[in-house]
Length: 484
Image (cartoon, rainbow, N blue to C red; front, side, top):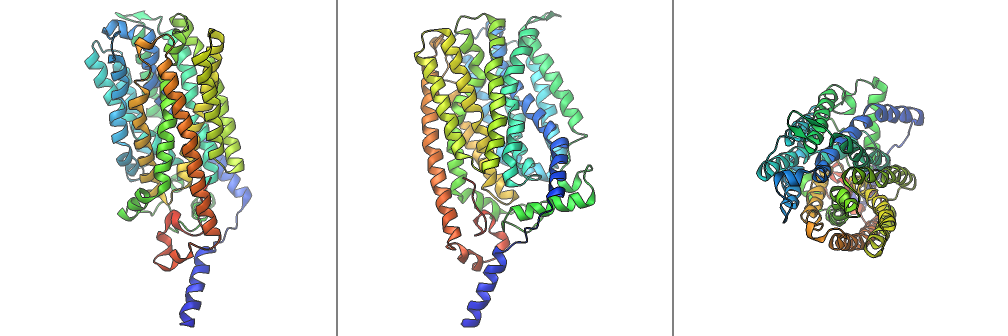
């Protein structure tokens, strides 16, 4: 019995001790190359994704609803909503295909196809046609966010992820600013029988298609397939991912295979569902703000072109905030406090829009909402990715998180109704309440993860090493530490 005990102790010590020797110069060189060769493409993907799903809001105040005869009732809201039905349904299966079908081909293919759909939206002449195009757009965009997060996790370590997530996600508020500027110009075009709003879809869709085609030639599938790395850099890029997993797996990303064991691990993880519902409530104000900001500003009495241009400053403020908070979050290795802080700022913004008597104060409130809400999503993406391992656990878990979270669209697209203009009290109130719930759920997740980390530090999870193959423990490994 003593011999068995010594053997078990040796096995535990071997499993929890990892050679963490790091060549910092080599590490920085690899990161710099990834930043140069990967991030610009992911930034472009997300920029065009948000422009092409949100430009319907710009088209609305450029005459879309008048021309299609959907100015009354909830038809416009239905057109917004149907986008999210396929968007939600395809996320998990799409995430599983990212590596199987080669990320460097699969992601550009999605971009190209949804760009074509966006282009053809300019030809619609009925409500039914608009609904069909929005369904197809959601189908093509559904795998993008999860796919991009998983793609990033193939190249960067856990506490390098948030800054990179922020650097691509800042394209979301930038799309609002850029989309507003672009729409203000495109909505003036009257050529070939098509005037104003169709040109928003025509031009923005064609540019997306061109970007998708070009990205086919530059996005590597994995670190081992990155032509811009030399052999030493490729070897280190793979090795550091094993080190970063802290026991989650000793298998290279190239060699991991889909196994239902990993699927079940993702579905049983409490952090999967906590992250999902945090993001669910956070996305209610984010989606409604992105889609309805032009209408909110138009409700303050500004005309179409002016309202388009007034969407730019709040979105630019959010763009800067996303980058700054992402950088700070990776430095301090914390996500939860940043989300809570952003929600508090957003709450203040909604209070201003609800109670203020002047347009200047209400408009100032849009800045606080943009600053507070947009920075929370990359935090959630990084948080979910940090706390699920290895690759296929992360793929399934993130797919579940995004699928559940995006159900918030069923609320977000119906809280800003035409009958509530110009003050939109219902929409502002629901969004404010959603941010309060987000704060509570973030605090709950931080308590759970902190308690689990303390148990691992006290050795209370070492028994897992004796129950089977330590390489298949994933994020349940005693050496794995959750990010708060």
